[in-house]
Length: 219
Image (cartoon, rainbow, N blue to C red; front, side):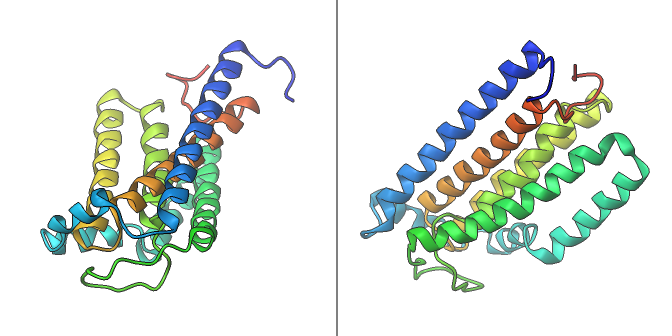
């Protein structure tokens, strides 16, 4: 435990950890409910979204494939070399991305929910719950929305960038339904898993007094 842990850090870590636990509990609850048995009315109703805006949905889906994430991560590494004050934030984002990617893949094998049969464009063979795209959208873009909003850069840039990242997350969640790649409960489960991961990372960083926030919003 770090010496002289400040009250603000202690409270912030506790809140983030509590939110992480709640989000993970919701994720587990949904997973247990959907793992065995046919889709319920809520999942069945989502078929009306399939095929609407398929091209845009496919573009949004690509934002979380390795062909897009790898160059983004490389750019972040270059930024970390030139801007020491961003190194911790970037290192956490890369570690979190890899950890949650692995976690989502392994948890799909735990719940083993079959994919829906009415999807379009690209058929993947992985299990359905949770949606890895939803998990990584929150894990990566959601993390950066939080970090940018709390950073020392100008207020206008912080606001626009964080809002665009949140819009991208929403777009990815919609895309998985528009392509028929997942049921809504898969997407919600992935969202909860990603939120749990981000909050857990924030909790650990605050407990260890590792700065994720900039000077303007930090300690």
